[in-house]
Length: 279
Ligand SMILES: N[C@H](CCC[C@H](N)C(=O)O)C(=O)O
Image 1 (cartoon, rainbow, N blue to C red):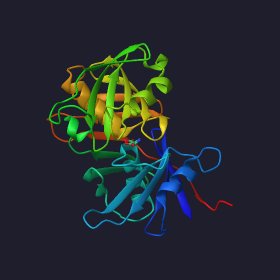
Image 2: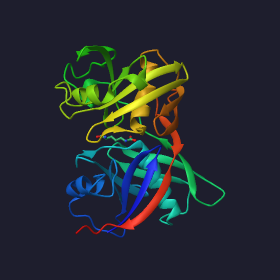
Image 3: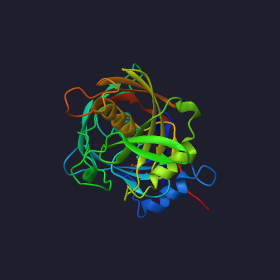
Image 4: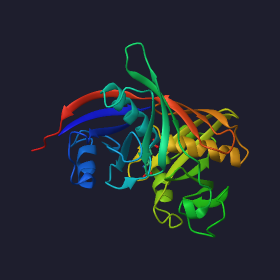
């Protein structure tokens, strides 16, 4: 099976062009190919597929085999793959995801390859029912206190198609993400688990984010997480509607200005292609 390894701000996935390849069992393939010792090594698997209602469709599987509704860093790479590999020639495209059909704009560099992509990531969901999160279905979860392992935390929860719990901390580089992240991912409040974003505010227009991803553990970046952080900052009055988000693997430029769709602009990089043929 031919595959391509790509990353967006260090959030790395194995991409398979399903116009050419047929994948019968993406769950076990993602578990095997994502393994950093026994496989190619990635945060998960992304399938590039034909769509009935958009230019392309993507499906994303975490390293543990679970399927996510959306992937912000992944969708930029899908767009770059499609343009650079000649699946389409235009720079404004639409991609079908589990969070609806999203509009993307591609920025092509002097070498004729896509370097950055802007994505309209859809509208956020703030009610507990959309996350999903336990409690009254129509209530928002803003600054909800939670004491865990000696830490007094506050959770603000936002759906970008997939669930995110946003937590503000003072010193994010020192925060025990690998200890607290999984306790929140698997907390009984979240029946379908949750992604967790730990955020330090630098200024009203600048934050540092670390991500504990549902189904993958700590990753170097999370695009839907950065969108959730943008929305959480506005609705709790902590940050402005236009922020630069510094993640471990790079920066994402985020906008949520009129209560509409969240916009994200960031890099997309192809690393290598290969043939996966275990045995
Ligand atoms: N890294 C991805 C999100 C993966 C989310 C996934 N871990 C889930 O189960 O929702 C991003 O850039 O948006």
